[in-house]
Amino acid sequence: MKRSKDWFKDLVIYQIYPRSFMDSNGDGIGDLKGIISRLDYIASLGVNAIWLSPIYESPCYDNGYDISDYQSIDPMYGTFDDFIAFRDGCHERGIAVIMDLVINHTSHMHRWFKASSASRTGEYSDYYIWKDPVDGHEPNNWASCFGGSAWEWCPERGQYYLHLFAKEQPDLNWECEALRNEVFGMIKWWIDNGVDGFRVDAISYMEKYPGFADSPEPPMPDGYSLAMNECSNREGTHRIISCIKQSLLEPASIMSVGEVNCMKLSDYHDYASQSRHEFDMCIPFISPIVEISSWSPLSMKKNIIDTYAELKADGWWARFLSNHDKPRQVSLYGNDREYRKESAKMLASIMHMLPGTPFVFQGEELAMADIRYDSIDDYDDIDTKNVYREMILSGKSEAEALDIAAAVSRDNARTPMQWSAERNAGFSEGTPWLGVNPDYKDVNAEKEIDDPDSVLSFYRDLIHLRRGSECIRRGDLSFQLEDDPYLFVFSRNLGNESYMVIANFSDSRRHCHADVPSCDVIMSNYGRASVSSDMDLEPYEAVIVKVKQ
Ligand code: NOJ
Image 1 (cartoon, rainbow, N blue to C red):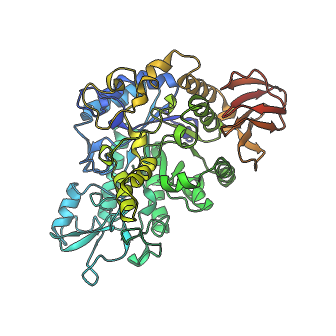
Image 2: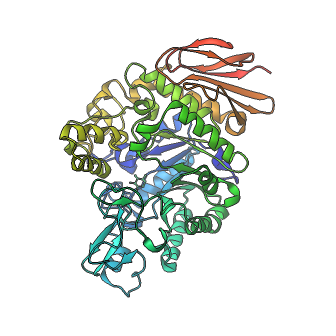
């Protein structure tokens, strides 16, 4: 594909979670042939990039984020030829291919880890982080973010290894030059195989806390303390990212988006401003537990305003409300009951009208909602099970623990894609690996496709509008009513062109008094024909107008 220097600014990215997208062979797991069969659907949305969550060989303790061979496709997803057919199918449709790059850790089944476990002196001995016991125990108090200690004893080598995620995901040792060269070679290999970009997983933790000192964070119910903050955003990590960017990505105009830990505003700048040569944009990770308990429309608006100011001169933004690690956006930020359609359209209007690159997570365009299973055994996600276990340890009843785990569960986003009202939502002819959301008879692509009022049609129109307007893609942003807790009123301006978005981020009617120039309504989720400086907005109403010049 032909790529200009800042082509990433013109993308609208569709994220596919391959396991749950489309199953072509009836084994209950989505696969590449299934994705290929739906490329026309994806293209019809108007998006011009696909980010594929991992499809590499993996024992799947963390659904592919534990890679055992970076250069093979897992047989459950298909073959390398299927990947090439997918890549070509995307490129023929003008869709760029963005792969997930998981290089903080590998699977414990990776041949590097097997060799590293076997010998303290061999070729791979330093590829991972090994430490001797301290007083017969783990080297420090660090917790894995999936529960328990971040250290696992390896009897074969007689040492502990570090895993900030599951014990099946040992952290790579980025201080080892041979490891660095090997990973750089792998990245180059994928570039040579025609991929256009990378979403780089959990990449804030390459350099660890100096001296592997104990974490000062309060202990979790099992007694260990998360050290993610202490291990985040260290100088050595920034150095390696910049080296990857300058030696591998920039020369080939490969786009990159880093999943990072932004603890302060300047972290956005450090990762996502062009002069730093790190990423083109970043996805700040926020744990669902923190997000659910702390978000509000106002905090979201303030974050948009602050990060806009932080990156305006020299950086770029990833715009998303959903991905495979979060509850569904219509359930978390909107109202998936009486205002499912309205709130889904309102959320999309804000995201797609902001400066930055919008991401659409599969099924979001149908307003797919959270799932609630009856038993913890129906959940698959390693993190959900960990939250449940921690809740039980902290004294909650089984019912209370299930309520909490269900609310934050990553499985909310991972239920099979709802294609039709047929068996298993048209996702698979076999038994899906994760239970289909029972609302699929009402919420599915087939039902939405030809309905001009559907959420899907609204997404298509929004994406079409954005892709056709330089002003929406590249223009400036300015807000009115910055401190209003529920109203989002903002303008996009470029030269003589100007658009405005007026939205009510709440489930009650609200009066909006704003400076609204003479304009034409372009899109509205309530069929509104005109706007004024004084008007009442319906629950979750959103209207997009073009200012008359
Ligand atoms: C972030 C990924 O998005 C998530 O799914 C995964 O569990 C962790 N990184 C570990 O790779």
